[in-house]
Every structure is written in structure tokens, then in C-alpha cells.
Amino acid sequence: MMAKVHVLDHPLIQHKLAILRDKTTGVKEFREAVGEIAGLMCYEATRNLPTEEVEIETPLMMAKCRVLSGKKLAIVPILRAGLGMVDAMVDLIPSAKIGHIGLYRDPDTHLPVEYYCKLPDDVGKRQVFVVDPMLATGGSAVAAIDFLKGHGCRQIIMMNIIGCPEGVKAVQEAHPDVEIYLAALDEGLNEHAYILPGLGDAGDRIFGTK
Ligand code: PRP
Ligand code: URA
Image 1: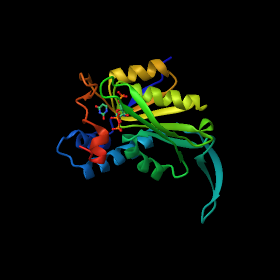
Image 2: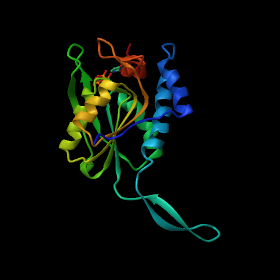
Image 3: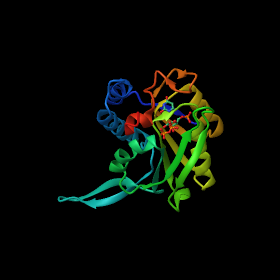
């Protein structure tokens, strides 16, 4: 069975996504909107995390409350563009550990090339959120998830701001256990494997490199 794809059509997410898509949006506003969307998506993607009951003493009496239980979390951005989503997630999950996977797409083959990896020692025991604004061919996502599984990870959630059918299919075929959270499922890819209508090159727009 294929894992679910969740497209988060919340009005706040959609409004901020329009800012990202707009070619006149500058680096500062783009970066801010990426972070804001990541925070809103994180809120939905963490909806099913396990909780446990605890007793807390309020100023008036004892109260039964729920707190996060079980596995600790890890956030793994795919470099570079995934870095733009990390701070907003850490604001919500301050105890999360952070791993980094560096991949870039070869401009001719569009295949991912790995150049860096550093993961928490105990990443295999954690619920992992892989973050990257774009899910295009899916090559980078599949390679990152392959790598994490090679390090023992069994609970992986993929969070992308914009995806397309080709990327979703690639992840679902290679990793049917991984749920995908998107803010938008776009039409498809152009001949350079850019998402249409998309937002252009996420890394360049976050870091101002073009
Ligand atoms: C972009 C994006 C994803 C990848 C998606 O990164 O951030 O990592 O492309 O494409 P795919 O689904 O076809 O693999 P890029 O390779 O441009 O590197 P960057 O983040 O360093 O700009
Ligand atoms: N990477 C990007 O940054 N944008 C795309 O549309 C596809 C891959």
C-alpha cells in the first residue's frame, strides 16, 4: 500500500505560497515565507505524533495533560534549499536533533550528487522529518530517504512545499512507507526538470545566488 500524500490547502499556507511563486518577490520576503510555510506545515505533519497523559499541578488543582511521548524527533534538511525550512520547525520542536544531507542535481542528468552528510548518532531511533522545498523528479528525496534507511531510520516523513506527480510517484514507488506533506501538487516538469508552474530555483531564491 502506498503511503498517503497530504496536500495542505489551508488558506494561510496558500496565501504564503502565492508570495513564493511570484517572480517579483525578493530574497528577504521569499526566505520569510519559506519559514512561515514550513512552520504551518510542521503543525499538520506532526498531527499524529504519539502523546501520553501526565498530571500537572495548576495554581488551582491537578490537571490531566498530554505531552509528546515515545520517539524523539530529527529534522533532516536536504542542502541547500531545505535549510530554509529548519528554523521554523525547530521553533516548534526545540528538542529535535538536526541532520544534514547535501545533494545537488547534476544540471545535465538531473540526477542527485551527494556532497555532504552528517546525521545524529541515534537517528535510527528517531521519527525523522526530511525537509526540502521542492520535490521535482524525486531523485533527491529518494536518495536522501535511501541514505536515512541505510542508517536504520524506519519512521520518515517527507515535507516539501511544492511537489509534482513525477516526484510523488518516484518516492511512492521507492519508499511506499513514507508519507509526503505538500503545500501544492503542481502540474509537472519542464524539459530541465523544473516544476511547472513552481517557483523557480528554490535554493537560488532563498540564498540570493542568482
Ligand atoms: C533542488 C531542490 C531539491 C531538488 C529537487 O535542489 O531543493 O533538493 O532540487 O529536485 P529533484 O526532485 O529532481 O531531485 P538543487 O539540486 O537545485 O540544489 P540546491 O538546494 O543546492 O540549490
Ligand atoms: N529544484 C528547484 O529548485 N526548483 C524546481 O522547480 C525543481 C528543482
